[in-house]
Image 1: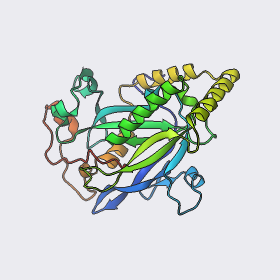
Image 2: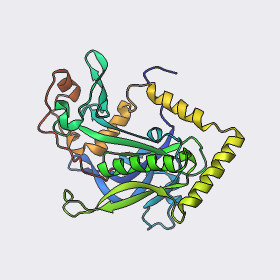
Image 3: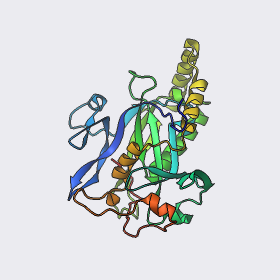
Image 4: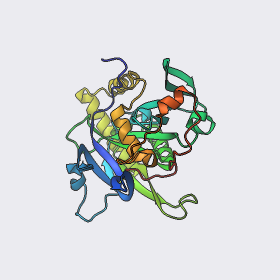
Length: 304
């Protein structure tokens, strides 16, 4: 195994609740009130739909607001990794990942482990440079037992709800989280900060029509069948844990470029722009306090 390279769950596609559109020379996120399943291939600046997107809709006009899923792992933190994250706005390179206590940060001396005071207390995070950032991997369909679709979010509501649900379901099922029949569900709410306009966030529930007792019985039966077939869930969880720990940062520069486009739209320069700001790594090296021109939307729940 190559050291320094995080080994992450194989990704078959993306789960989005919006898309990126070209407007005034910039690629900007456009909100939506439904899920979209895309492949990992882009054409003419747009992600191509995954075949499962059509399969999950009963009609071409139906909005996809619930997706039946299973999880890959029993450990909630392997399924959903949520951190405070800071990216270089020019390259998309991850620079600092923290949990509110400790962080890993790229410096001129290499990657260092440092205290993490959370974005509110970190001078490098001022101006919206650092956000909560979560990645959820789920299995959809039965074609690939280890393949997954990834949902990325910087929304507080999605991160808080998904984290709670995973911990609760793991406890409720007797550590059979990977065997539970679950469903990703899109929910809406209005807040003071949204000025009454609905925002949408992602929840994780039991599949529609199932009681807790029915879901637990199905999870227990599937767990027993897997054990009889030789399926070692504990070893799978440990392999995933080792893979994540193999690299300092889960996201590559390629992933980071998508993150910038999706979650930092106002900081992505126009294609016509000929001026280039100093990148964040340069500001980090000089202990800069942030760029007043960088504006983000930390309360936006809908992410393409």
